[in-house]
Image (cartoon, rainbow, N blue to C red; front, top):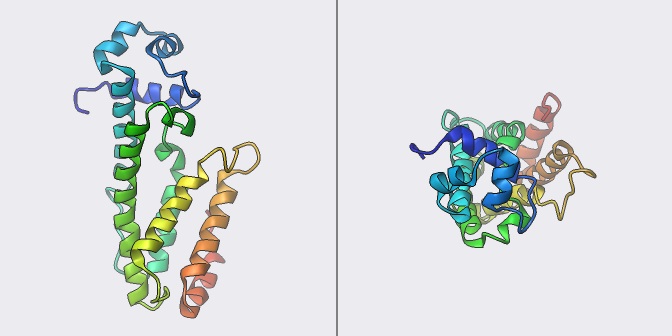
Length: 204
């Protein structure tokens, strides 16, 4: 994306986050951005090309968020708590601008985006679960591949407006409940005891 106007991409990202299916056209976008359609055509070629650029930008936001953050080889529950706090605190920076409605118009681009995102997050979360099992914090009967994908699917579902409309449930509350329920389900008794002590001093 070195030749792309990142400031323009960021503005587009904000604008199209409110679009519904069928609304993402250069004509609508040019009007909302107060630009000429020629600028958008020159920069992106087509609406599909624009979607590809925006989704690549979304993926870079996610990866850069963790570029300076690695799982330290300490307690796996501490690692997961810290990582989840990062996700929670910066959620608005990584939530896909291509909404579930717009994804219907650009299914191939959205599918590639989710595959890349899942692969990246899965590699980090899977390592955490492997570490937790070794430490006796997580149940040894768990499949690390399955449980990491389950965790990711819950993160994705949390910003599906069909499941959780913003006006009825705040993301912060939803995240707290999801994380708490998930951790308690994968922990051993040793892990639960440690987690109970940690959450007394933790606020998402």
